[in-house]
Every structure is written in structure tokens, then in C-alpha cells.
Image (tube, rainbow, N blue to C red; front, side, top):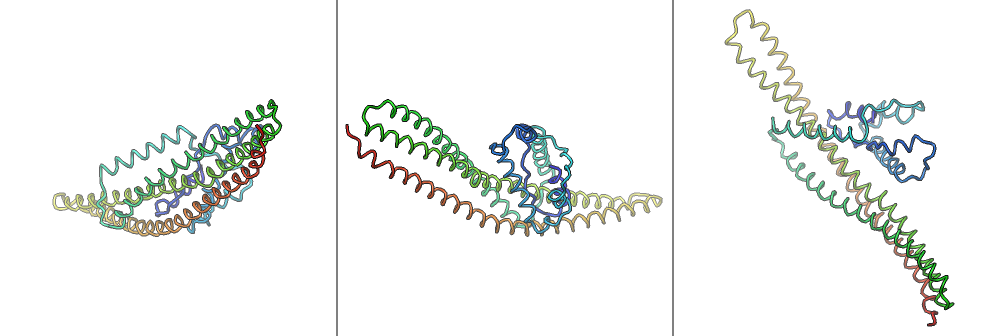
Length: 328
């Protein structure tokens, strides 16, 4: 997404946590561009929700909400330029390469962390990431379970309907017909429940996994700045050590290099300090939002579960009189 690339270029080096954009899938893009797709297509709806979450994060961010590129994206009616990033495989390979590059950089020049805040924070992020991945896996499993229940409920309802039609006993036939209706409506509830669990629970947890990835990205940028600072510092030491060995003709040029390198070192040190402060502010904001969001996610999930179980219990209460009237 061009917007995401522009925002990253402007704000990541300033220590801003930038949300992950929705990944582009060829199948979804093809559906969106054809006139035959329906507005209720699950993949298109899912991508729309991901895009909405991404834009909401940008709009709610105090440092990004007034950005001109974001404003243009939201207000310009003309067609926006296509992203230069290829979807699916290319994007995945690019992410993998960048991740590999970050690892190599850390191995080559490991950061000498002097700020205990970052050491503790890194440990807590890893723990949170592990717990959220487990929660997301369970949420996805729950969605699949609800979908399977809905499908099996529909199949059972069809079988019961056929059985009711061929039953000689009137009371048993009525009971089977009522049971058919019970399972049909239960299947509808389970299907709706699966959709809501996916949209409001699984995807919401997945969004926070993406935000943790964004935190790793901005921390990696901080490490990169630190590496540049230390390289400049080392270069400065090497240049100063040459002062006593070069002839008088080269002293002026060497002093100029020392001056430029020293300015670069001081600029990078200042950039590193400012980025470290900005990241701490960003993490504080992230934690406040996470606590509130997680509370809302879980409350909504529990309320949805209670409502669904109450509805299903009412269906079985309606069926009970038919079962009691069966005469064998």
C-alpha cells in the first residue's frame, strides 16, 4: 500500500509505531475489480475490515492524523496511484528478507543496551506475542468449530425433515418437524456466531499481533540508528589517530573529515536519544489502548456467547412440548 510506505518513510525513523497494512491477495483484488462479485463476499468483507482497522489506527494517532498523505487518501475522489509493492508472494519475500537483514545486522553489531527500560520491555513484548499467538490460534479454532457446527446442524435438519415426512405417527412427525426447525435456527445462530467471533475476536487479536510486529520494526530502526552512530564514532577515532601520522599537506583535509564525521556522530546520537524517548511514549500509548481494547474485545465476546446460548435455550424450550406429546 502506497499510503503505508509513505507513512513509514516519514514517521518510523521518528519512533512512531505504524500499524501493519492489510496484505493484498490476488483473489480478493480480482473479486473487487469484477462486476460479478457480491458485497457479501467473506474475503472482500474481511479485507474491508482490515483496511478500516488500519485507517482507524492512523486517524487516531496524534502524530499521524493530520498527515497530508493520509488526508489525501481519505478525501481525494480521483483514483489513487497503484502500490509499487507486488501482492502475495513478493510482499512475503520482502518481509522475510527484511527480517533476515535485521537479524544479520544484530549479529554483526549487537547493540550495547544501557537502558534497562528497553531490556524489560523487550521481554514483555515477547511474552505478550507468545500469549496472543496462542489466543489467536484458539480463536481461529473456535471460529472453525462454529462453522462446522452450523454445517452439521443444517445437514442434520435436512435429514430430520425427510424423516418427519415419512413418519406415520402424527405426534412423532410433528416432533421431528419441530426438531428440524430447532436445528435450522440453531445452525443459523452458530453461523452468525462464527462470523462475529471471526470479525470481532480473532481478527482483533490478529491486529495486535500486527502491532507487535510494528513495535519490532520501530525498535529495529532504533538499533539501526545506534549502529550508524557507533560506526561514525569508530570512524572518528580512526581519523583522529591518523593526525599524528599524515604529512602537513593532508592535515587540512583530514581535519575537515574529522569535523564532518563528528557532526554526523553528534547528529546520530541526538537522533538515537530522541527516538528512544519517542518509542517510550509510543509504548505507553500502546499499552493504554491495548488494555482498553482487550477489555472491550472480551466483554463483547462474552456478551455474544451469552446471547447465543440464551437464544438456543429458547429454541429447545419451544421444542420441549412437542417432545412431551410423542405417543409411541
